[in-house]
Image 1 (cartoon, rainbow, N blue to C red):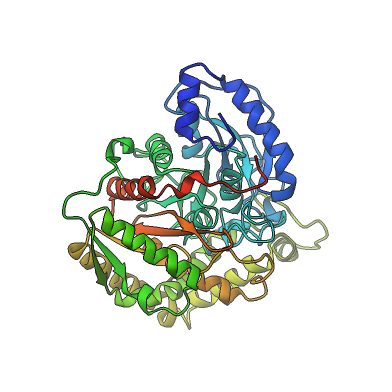
Image 2: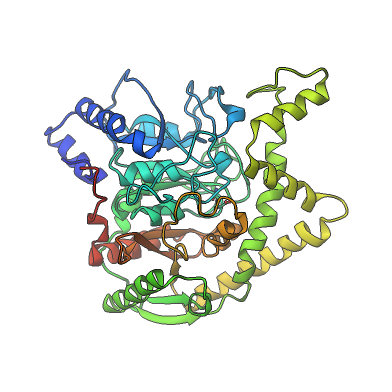
Length: 476
Ligand code: GLN
């Protein structure tokens, strides 16, 4: 066993009794104590009461993003307003991991309420990228990705509304999936934009991702949007080969865009060659409305965020401003003191696009184009089996380089927001490194409920390239 063991490696070692669940717990706790001060990826670890050892993930430690409720534990969503909030119940995904024998070890840092793409908008300080401590690990599931990359946990859960699992996974040389909307329960996940919010798994390998997704699968009666589906075994889909006659569509915007930096383009082109060697036929596919993806996401996610965050007014839970002379002032001061600047910006925009005078021009129009985008993706999947693009157009950027330029940060989501808006799955996998050794990721998109296909393709690509075996220096 070493710090960068996969979930599968650890599972085998546990099954062969080469190591015990308690030893694993001590091992990762010690690593968190040693390395987290540099990274600020983990907000809290739980002192041990009982280490499970039965089930598909029997005895395997994990960390959950701070917006996934773990009963009786602080769940702050990276926000000051929920600093002292203790979750009164267990999120379904946490419950399912626990039932599969996983050991829920702590919670990870994140952009406040998932609103950000760098980890820098956390009320608890920025998370650093283990591949280069002066750079961002991506966001908003920044802590989950940095913790897996540095070997502080074998896997972690993140959440994604518009890229927040895939983006940090790609910046940290990891695998991250946004599943079909409704596949993993949202019960107990603190809402940002409910029509696209999903839990996603962050791992070192595709097989690990498929294994954890297997334990999360199946309908949840607590979530009205949960797909009524029996649990699945995603491991069964990993053949190591592409299906015969397999066709991959390059999203045309990738070829046209001047926003993609040369190092990412170089890795993307090499990945396409690799896919050809694996037997794929490559086509170019135009999704004409893709270029509206960020605008749609901007409008829809802010509108939903404004509604979802309405509840944090100090009256029900969370922090309450102390010095207020009447109710209205209490609401105002609580929100003024409790939310960070990015969250406030989004609430403002959300209320604006929903207001009586503007909703036709923005929110309602966005819903129309959303339907158009969905139709265009569906049509594309009649021509090709999967679509492919870089996960992020740039390399992991320097900390503090974009915090004063929110628009530049929003543009980093060009390729990750469109599929979230229409609720279809995508998986990001490592695609190699830039000259200075920074990770680059590519992603595969599939139609609704094509997770098995996506896991299979990503696994075949990963096994042929092996980039996941490289780990960041300084965390041995
Ligand atoms: N970076 C995106 C944003 O700032 C994605 C966030 C997310 O998926 N939670 O909104």
